[in-house]
Image (cartoon, rainbow, N blue to C red; front, side):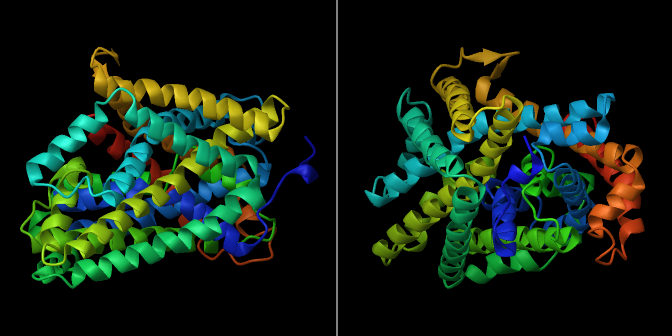
Length: 452
């Protein structure tokens, strides 16, 4: 395929919003508040921000450099820079990781749509025991979650087949402002509740006595996962960047948006939880079990407001999930489109069908626990394998590849746009990529496996 035929984002705003949309997802709106609640609040957030600067920005720049330099899908991008060396396999590994994540991510995305529907018709307006049982009954239902995940994937498919500028960029320009507005509206409503100040204090008044090695490593891990590093999304999107895109400035802006949305998600959730005396350390159940009860109790005086907040919250979750699933889908679509030399629509159809099949089996593993491998429920196996093994390994190898194998001149040329923009922090960046980031990722990896 001729390089001049390759699609590009049409504007700088489109680049920022689309790439930020790739990074912003359930990791920000679900996982970040969960991790913050489990690790003591404000102190965790401060450590997280430091980790984003030390780990997130350099690793994001790694993928930007590789993607824009090669102007190709993730697998071919690494191959172009690696030649015939084994380093080329990192790109294929990234595509495979993104493909598997899309396969099970759509299950949780479908749950979000179900909860939008349930909130609209008032199915979540019950006592706490009912709401807890509701999630258990729904997630283990043999057909409802499958229906929603297929609907979610079809929406994603429609965006992808429309292309980079008319599909991904246009959708991002709509969804990202909607996401931000919803976050602000719900956060304001949450902060106006009685006793909400305790939740605000939890987020912004650090207690460093709670910081231990587990908190440090959890913050490192969240920085890595929150920015969609190691799954091919950023590399693929960077291949659509214009040659005059300032990579460093774009990375800083995207990381800032990502972190702001994560903190807004905390402001949206914790003041409401504290207002009703809920458990801030409820873990993954926080979103689908704890929060419906929080909304019911916090706005009991005005049930209609609580009902509306619940609808907006799950709509927000759905939008966040969609922006990320679009980028995950695009990684594999670009791969099949370019490597098999088929139309974009055909490539997208292959991805939609195959990932939907994976999603169906992952969803059915909640209905039938016999659907498992290696003694793990299929959904949990995909989550564990990709999140705790594949992503850290991919990020670690990419740091070694760009820091030690790719010629320093190529990296500098990309970061300076062939010498037309300043790269004052180039040596600091290179030091982080060669030493700091690999060490951090190695620590994350060992921590996730329970070794340290």
